[in-house]
Amino acid sequence: MTDTELLAEQQRISARLYRGVIFSFVWLCGIGSLYSLIIGIDALRAIRRADGMLYGKWRAWWCVGVGGLGSLFLVWFVLTLILHLCGIRIR
Image (tube, rainbow, N blue to C red):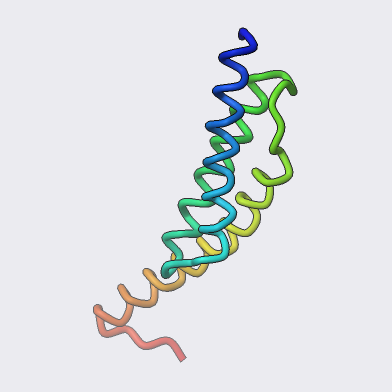
């Protein structure tokens, strides 16, 4: 990977991770967290492919961790909605 390609990839990853961290705080009913989780996983893969030449691993792990926790809320919400629509009550 040339220096120009490396710089372009770093800028792309940094911009996406910035959005990922913002969306990890702004849940948007879990959808923002799911977006953050996907961005974090994608960034970790790109950093691994670059053999350590790119940085942002901690922000990527933040997106994976917080986005994953927020995504659990989305799963809970969807399951609760489906059960409610089916008339099933859990006490």
